[in-house]
Image 1 (tube, rainbow, N blue to C red):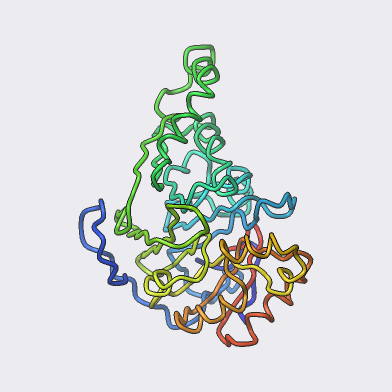
Image 2: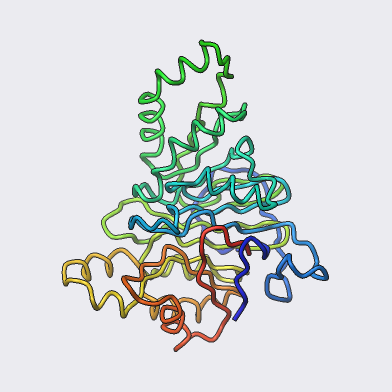
Length: 323
């Protein structure tokens, strides 16, 4: 098993054929020969891509786990996936410990898997706080249908605050508090010199639009499940990835829940035994668990539920872990 290092280790192009909105050729991402090294190892080669787990939580009010949020940092550019509660402050904590690109003014690219509140409650914070701290460009938001309405309503709710900061003594700039919203369908949704991002549909209960993402960078390929039950589209789009970041719940913990909650969670999420079967088909170099629903199950028991049938490298992430 790979050792999980707090703020220490480094940071997926299937044949999915839906048309996207970003032009150009996909970036070829060579597969590293070895598991992601720890930056604590001075002899390990420096990687261009790092994964920072800014929030690994669920709707449960766990003070040790902020709302769902991940940063993929390529060289000096961060790309955020989801914006749960505490995102901006977790980014500041990561910056303080050496991840300089996560400075607030650099938080400019956001990709949203779906519009559940535990994945979006930090959107107001992400729109406004980095602007207050110096961001001069609009926040670029890539999200499912409904994202534009959400962002517009947030900005309207804070209209008085924005007016005071821009026209009052603060003299804040007028662009850093705005958003360019790109509502997407499956396919390639974003591309620049650092990364190609593909969105693929997943099944998350009664949500009509829920997505996972495949990030291809110059040196790594990372797939993020978002919230989902096991589905073929994820397995297809995760083929060949270096890292699979997947939500999970403990089967033993679920069995202690009331029947109504068992029906709910099994229709919206993925159990540890189910994830083990997914990982056996995908064969990532590293499987990272996040959005862990434990319900009193020890974390090591959750890992053992996966290891019973999956022998690859797997780790259970905590806030501010880096891979």
